[in-house]
Image (tube, rainbow, N blue to C red; front, top):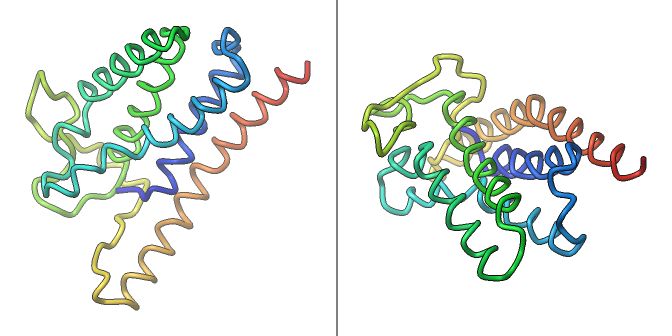
Amino acid sequence: MPSPVAHGLAGLSVVWSLEGLRLLSSLSPATKRRLLATCLLFAMVPDVDLLFTVHRGPTHSVGAALIAAVLAGGVAFWLRLPFVPIAVACGLAYGSHVLLDWLGEDTSTPSGLMGLWPWRSTYYRSGLDIFEGISRRYWLPEQFLAQNLKAVGLELAVVLPVAALAYWLRRRVSSG
């Protein structure tokens, strides 16, 4: 499963892509900056389940991404901000976490993630294993550091070009 580095870059990429597609043009520059920070967090928040030892369960699903979108849209509406673009951005940022984890290596049991919760409680794996697992064995410093540096390096090789393309698209549209 990818690290917070990959998840954070994916969250930023969502906002930059939506800006590049001019889907956030109704937002002020200050609101766009807050949305960027919010989506960065939304892309990492599914891993809060690590605190409850139920990793890759309901928080790693399309259903949870829809709930996140509705909650973000509700907050936007309450703050009198355009709720549709904010809900879409936050839902996609949250969903990016589910996608990246689905594409990642998973050697734990049960293998995969509960991607279609609440409709199904089945665990799904893509089998592609694009991203390596992140070691949580901090008590084995050499293995912990070596594995995680290797995993983050691979994540950067895969996700950084996507983020760079999204950022370039955003800059191209804003300067043109």
